[in-house]
Image (cartoon, rainbow, N blue to C red):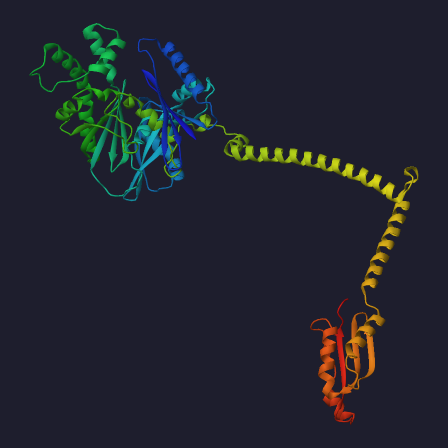
Length: 542
């Protein structure tokens, strides 16, 4: 997913495109599209639309989400407390609370969103950002005119806070705070952070343009030329010793312009100390107007508070705000706006696209976009399988027809049937006759392999007639196929010899003695030297 944060400023349209990975994001590209200060409002609006069109042409992917940002000087900020933590309850109670805070305005003409700050003493503290519907409508019309549907419309304070805020919740009460001061072109924004959490936001109608105008008037140069000199050479002097008259004069011009900002900051520090019992621990400077050399020293001596410039945002250390060679100071808001798209439901983004401005999502298009790749793979696999099935079926039918023709030809040749007289009954009759002939042939083969009774008697006679004087009397001989049962009487001393001869005639392990000779001898009262025998065995083949 690609998120493009867009900051429409007074002197440039700034955009940062980031790509979300598993647990982090990477910056793909940054854009600064200038707007000339001396142009009329109608010309500026046309130029802004032109810049937005060029951005839309760069990022046309359906996976791209555009996040726009309202300037903080047209957004109202209020701090409220609620005796419950649930966001849906806070949203329901919000209109009644805002009636007292914004009594001069009709709440129906405002759209508000909340940002929870901390939970202390059983109450949930929230920041309420409110903007007029007219301002939102004008911006959305310009955006929609170029074919872009905004994903989120946030405010400048929420966007910038993404770079410095720690999202871990805390309930410890602490009075010291850090003040992050973003000095822009037309306005300055002060963000109050306590324990890494945004607590309040203040906006001043003073920006670096005030310094640039004084330079243009003093040296009688066009505004754009004065702005170029300001960006390249702006400085203030804390002491005049060792500097030329022109350097001292240039420094005084800027100091006079900064006096207005210093007065506003003094009042803010006194207000926070008096109303909230907060004490400023340190002031951090960033933004395009903070690049004036020695500005942190001037503010530190005037405010009696340590002041330093921000070097790297905690959540994005590779973004260098001190060295402004790549104008990264000017892209802070755009980067923070892009990061709004990364927020989870636990701490959602500030979004003014509500009520009549809510983005209409087509469920089918949302489903198709979410499951785009699996659907493409599934449809592709189905088409490939369908084509394969059709080809396979065609080939099978072709082979089946070929086989049928071949069998038909061979059958006619074998059966010697005239093709004109060919019918199913004649074919079936021919097949039955062939089956009968085949069975008879198999039976004849089995019979031919089976030994005859005469052959068996001959082999048995040869086996037992090796000795003529052993007084052998065969009483019973049964021959069933290759199984033989023989019963008789013999002299006891020749019984082992008879058994040995029968073993040579029998298949290995098949010779069995069926009667006990000694038992028969006692029961029949025979002479002691004559015994009865009965053997069963399967004769060898061949």
